[in-house]
Length: 144
Image 1 (cartoon, rainbow, N blue to C red):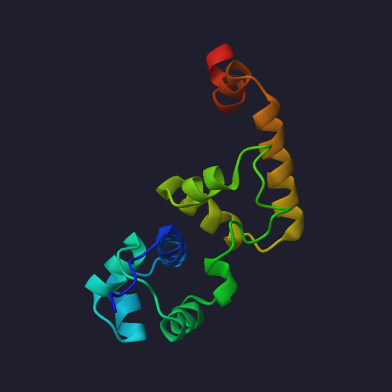
Image 2 (tube, helix red, strand yellow; image 1 turned 30 degrees about the vertical axis):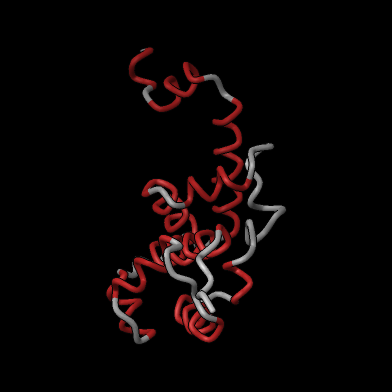
């Protein structure tokens, strides 16, 4: 009997492993050591080249501090992970960038709920503002 080849689901699960690992600033080597595999195996999992078995996925989930379902969801919180009508794929792509991860880490580091809400309001306001108006906000001395 021939072994099953990885599928697009395997690639998606691997991409979620990678995104979570990077969000936690954990190297492939560090994750590999914690779950008892080589870093090359982590690379293969993340690229979707190798399938992740159920018990190994459970171990990865525990190590990364997420439930196993996290790796199968298109987004972890549908109501809060929407991007003004953009697909969740756009959000996942953004969260896998350095800017997306930096923004997410910085936001999560803000302990005050009030400050978080003010930041969200500011961001929404900036998103509604035209690019020339944003330049005025960012560089007010240019118009003085």
